[in-house]
Image (cartoon, rainbow, N blue to C red; front, side, top):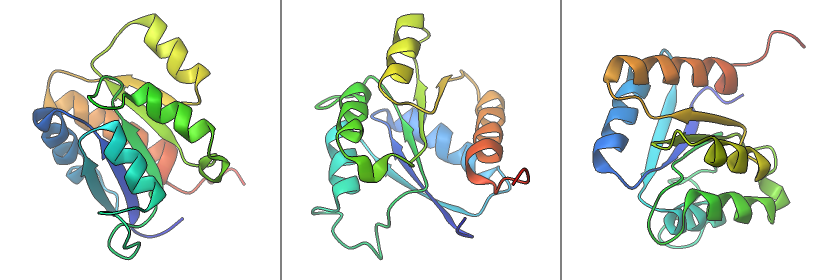
Length: 144
């Protein structure tokens, strides 16, 4: 696992992105969080096309935090795209959404999501979610 994890955050709400990025800073984890505002930008980033063509500046992520309800292309569109691109099959995709609908949760897992969290309403709860995500998805396993 790289010392500096690259987290791609696909989130259309500036407020939610700020809350998430602030919580990530509170987690004891070396990381760089790159924010894109919709599913189309997320796919462009993953493909490495302009404006994300420079892989030194925009490296492939170790983790994707993905909102479901975004303009242009939704999180579900991104999940379907990822399914069709097997080079990303090892990329953990964590859904972080305002939806608490069981149908959205089931559909997200059906389309390949690794984990699912509903967005909390306060920064303390967001910090707990980011700590859990970091511990589960970005720390090296000790069970090997």
